[in-house]
Image (cartoon, rainbow, N blue to C red):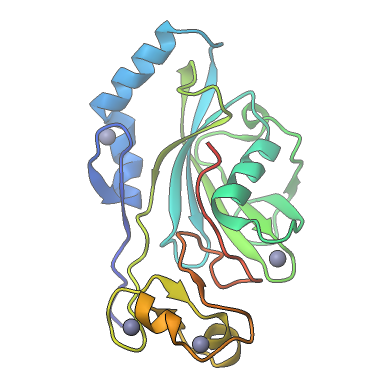
Length: 228
Ligand SMILES: [Zn+2]
Ligand SMILES: [Zn+2]
Ligand SMILES: [Zn+2]
Ligand SMILES: [Zn+2]
């Protein structure tokens, strides 16, 4: 089987485009990131450990984020961030576990990053214990200094939207039919034109094909934008 092409994303500091693992290395040495950190260290804010997190869907890793998180912020804040950018449909429960998979020890959401994280650690975040979304959180690195943002989390890169083709005509798709996915075991990806005259309505009109691993699950419709 042909290997799936890895998704690319852009470094927010220098605009270079790379894969998830390419960015994990690049962000350690990106000159523009070093400049931004230097500038932040001159400014207000308190010095603390700041963690570089690589976050990916546990399914096939096509969806991913590179984040910086303040050591003084809690896992609850990270949970909130993941819900807004990727997951929230109807307020399900969520949990952090040590390791990859469902077997690990639970980590309380009230823990601060500096209490819970160290480079090399992997956590699993589970959102919704019914139709579950599993997310892997890898602690790539830590720096001592001042944060780049007043918020708990700073977005350094994310995957570009996945390319999908319309199942009717092969043109780029922007919509998803949930009836195709849930009831007919089909891809359900549609272009603008074919979304308009698509016959299925069991779960409403086709929904926008947003940049989230939860697309098509439990009626999730996005918008998959970062909270700040
Ligand atoms: Zn860069
Ligand atoms: Zn839901
Ligand atoms: Zn089409
Ligand atoms: Zn359909």
